[in-house]
Amino acid sequence: MNGLAGRWRRASRIALILMISMAVPGLARAGDITAFVALPAPTDTWARGYGATLSSTWFQAVNLEAEAARLPGDRTDAAMTSFTAAALLAPPIGVLTPYGGVGVGLFRQTLGTDTDTGTLKAFILGAKVKLGLVVIKGEYRRITLSGTPLLNMTARISAGAGISF
Image 1 (cartoon, rainbow, N blue to C red):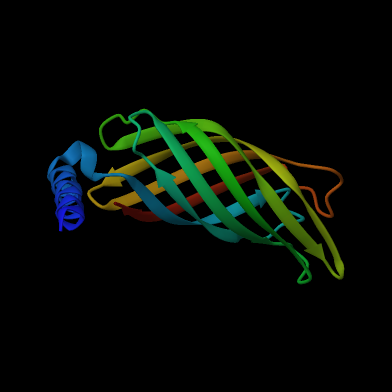
Image 2: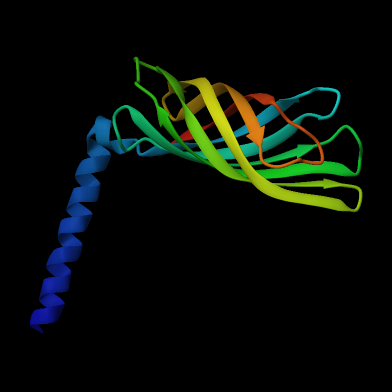
């Protein structure tokens, strides 16, 4: 019986902490999730792509981010999928949060029957506007792909929208 009472008290404390954190505006926002449209460069090689980002805003001026993107080539048999983790300096200024940082990840390209898998590095600059639960963002990424990729990509701009939670 004593073990059950201890678990009950622990669960009650956790529930109380969660309720308090939801009541305090500064603690209630833990992150955001956004969907975006991307325009990669060089534009003669790549078509408009899409993706999604999950950002953690637990820390005041530092965001941790995970992103997945799918970028089709201008040719119908060309595409790239990438997964990136990033650390961003993101000091909030009212509803505006400018950010910048670095990211590392993996990519996989296909061109006809050929495939290439490698790593990527990204230098990231952007800004988010948070209006209640709605997040709107714009971003620039300078991208470096490892090895000799099937199709080179040097940069990407994107715009997206999502929700803050």
